Length: 415
Ligand code: HEC
Ligand SMILES: [Cu+2]
Figure 1 (tube, rainbow, N blue to C red):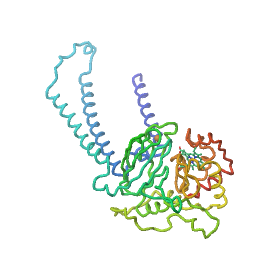
Figure 2: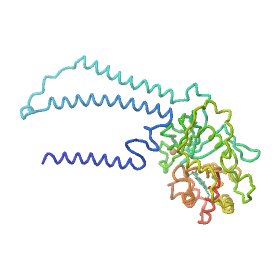
Figure 3: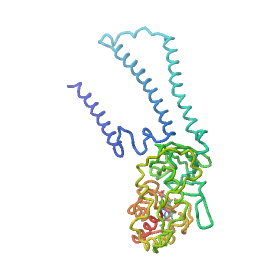
């Protein structure tokens, strides 16, 4: 009884720890499948797969070392333990000066273990560093810029309309839409401190460093919706500096581009207004740069995102117009751009097609009416220390409930 109590306590502690871990991990995914939104074990692209491969090789090699060393230790512990009172006070056994065979074996074994790890590691360093030579011409280029605490994505090769005469590179925020099945090279920049771009299921992570031009590449095997995260501590809201990656088949990607390149949508009361256009009106032809895509894409978990592309069913043109006016009068335009409408601020995310995004506040809140109103009312209460909240304080911006509803309606209409 006396000896079994500590044993019991040890076991319960172990079981409690395991249960706690499972519970904790069980919050948003199945612990045993390890298939969370940000899993690096269940991956969806070649770069993440290479990285996972290195991880596995290292794990197996270290597991073998652990078993060998642990086995020898356990053997020696049992074999040479003191078995009687007399043993405990006995002289130590004669001490040897090493066994050349064992020592050479250990050196050889260690070198072998390192070589086994080095081969896939070197291989992965080459393949993950840049798009493989053969596919380089097919790579799609995007620039990602880190801001405290959100991401800006610029598609330099896509010229978006500002008005009838002026064009500028397409800019979006917090949702990175990429072509699936095609390498994407992401240039990494920051406007303030060091951030790091990480999409665990696709690739990661590479730092965005001031005054340094870094880049990474990634590729999604097939269309999908992926979770990303800033992976370098960057201040108050670092933990909620998130983003999403939406990978689309070639046609859908082109449709998305066509939509994004247009100026902001205007909800006009007149039924014949051609500006009140639905998203993805038609399947357009492939762009010339869509080479090398032959796979048939089987699209599945993107429905929520797709729904967001269509105008809201209960749109109220009068309310939207009121919100649009407030967007100027409440100084939102000083930090935000809505191409085609008023506003050319660049210190906050581009909102030209904000209504077509699934998330807001850099992947923190779902982009629906309720959350949007919450955010507009008091961004500081939602996301600690963020720059928009500071702007509200500095500019003494106060939003009434009525204004909040109208602003939300306007932002929602920006498909
Ligand atoms: C001082 C500059 C500033 C002002 C003024 C400002 N914003 Fe922002 N806004 C930001 C910044 C910065 C962010 C990103 C915050 C974050 O996620 O950390 C943001 C984020 C947002 C977002 C979420 C965008 C996304 O993709 O996540 C919305 C919507 C928004 N602002 C609407 C408004 C509205 C409406 C007003 C006017 C009432 C306004 N903002 C005024 C700077 C500003
Ligand atoms: Cu960051």
